[in-house]
Amino acid sequence: MPSHNEPRQRGICHRLDSHTSGIQIFGKSWEAFRHFTVQNSNHKMQKEYVALVVGRVGGADGPHSGLIDVPMKKWQDFGRREFGSVICASEGMPAVTKYKVLRHLHVPAKGMTRFWGKDRWFSLVQMRIMTGRTHQIRVHMAFLGHPLVGDVKYNPKSVEEDYAIVPRIFLHCLRMEFEDMDGSTFVASSDLASDLQVALNRLQRLAAGGAAPADGGGGTLGDDCRDVPAAELGFPGLAELLRRTSPPGSLPAAACRSGAAVEHDEQLSVGPGAGEVAGEVAGCEADQGGTADDRAGDSAGSNSDNRA
Image (cartoon, rainbow, N blue to C red):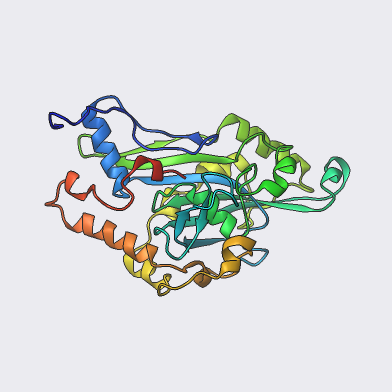
């Protein structure tokens, strides 16, 4: 129970970015609010998103999946960037994202798409965030050179063209797994938002000869979003995380700002975040004697930093 001076809060237990659709958890009582916000702060909620990004992630030959371990921090020089922006920085907070390409889409520069003046590639990507930093998915994908479609903050150069496809950022919280109030595991899922599904259907009609999935399989775009087994995006083991994580060091300045695409899995890990987060998760799972409140005080504790 809260102390005499502690407010009995209730409400939204985690945040979605503005114009992002999908699942949100609402605590109708103080006990529920506290239960779920503590889980969120301790990285115990598993969150999966689907996004449409600019470019052909992994190229023709792959890799079509990977783990992005790139620290992030809020940008302080408001005179040079839009207020509230986030950048990749070696001195930032650990931020870890796992991704899998579901489908590539190629729209040629002909017919109704001539206003683009060139061929355009898009990738439908499903992601799981292991940390909850502000704008994490958006910044990590922009770091790889594949910003989200419709993201005016991190992809302003092509946003006018993107708005011909969808009038908002293409990001949807698809699935969440967490511990319910009674200790059982609860899984919440959400179909792709209707406006985003319409946009995908429109894009597929523009794509020459249909759209080929990254793995060469068949099915509709809606099937790709709904039918990917959750286990494929599960948390990797600690040893695997550490294998993918290089020693701490300075990030190349060009990588933070030029958006150059990363070609190989091994290059995705440039910070210590995966190891730190994996250690926290492993520690929480091993220490069954600690309470949820005892584990609440990590560096990602504020609601404002638990966004995609």
